[in-house]
Amino acid sequence: MKNKRITITGGKGFLGKHLIRKFQERDFRNIAIADLPDYNLVGPEDVKRLYDETRPDIVVHLAAKVGGIGFNQENPASLFYDNLMMGVQLIHEGYLRRIEKFVAIGTICAYPKFTPVPFKEENLWNGYPEETNAPYGLAKKMMLVQSQA
Image (cartoon, rainbow, N blue to C red):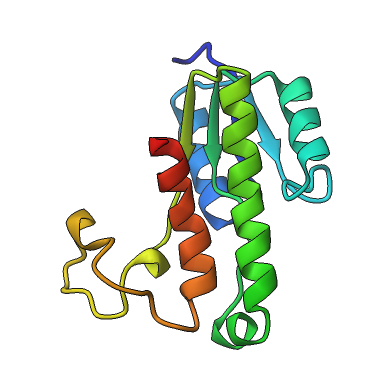
């Protein structure tokens, strides 16, 4: 695995920085970071260019358009669209290129509004998410549907 080419979207973000550090501690050296402003992962051309330039064996998709509750309430359409399109483009282009492994990070926001704690995977489809998080959560949840397809 240490010789695999790994591309991490959102590598400059909170999770990405920690993941890259852990990979480097384990002597992984073939790591590419895909983030703004170099790649706008909402658009298919940037996703294709990313894959052309990094030629990944493995993709870890952490990138997301995110905000707090106020941002979510003011921008539900762009949160849904941008996050949905990032996932759709990356997974589909990875599928076409036969990328060995695609790891997609979801969100707790994909779970139903009323979910027993602790959260369990079998509860994922048992209701609609909390309304202010639903556009983001459902966009991320669609990566699971696409991956299973």
